[in-house]
Length: 159
Image (cartoon, rainbow, N blue to C red):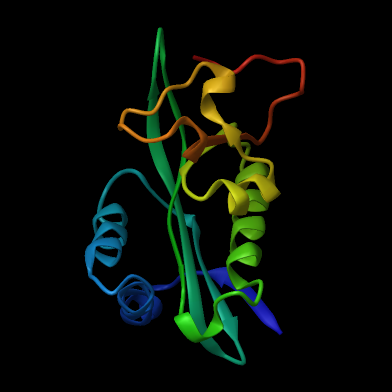
């Protein structure tokens, strides 16, 4: 049984290890540490997945700026990782679903992610260009995605 809960400082070492195992490098774990120490960190949206009492996955949503005619504070989903031997078992999906549900409860409006289209589209993410939002990086349009969290379908995205 997968249990999703808020990360605590006692989880920091195992979370760093999960990112190292999942990506074979320290970059993503270092990113998590940097975000934790910034004013963009949202403790309620730093979640871990436990399987039989062992932390096997992590997801982090933090504040980013959507820059346009006006600047908007929205959520960025990154990073996410699951220990390799527990991948492809629904743990990553459970983390995304729990994080999006928490973001909605908190009244957040929009989540941006740079990731695999087939994975994130299952949760309602769409290419950001559909909403006039362009990636600040040179990446294929389809991998820079957004999910409207608390917007009625008829409401425009604030850009």
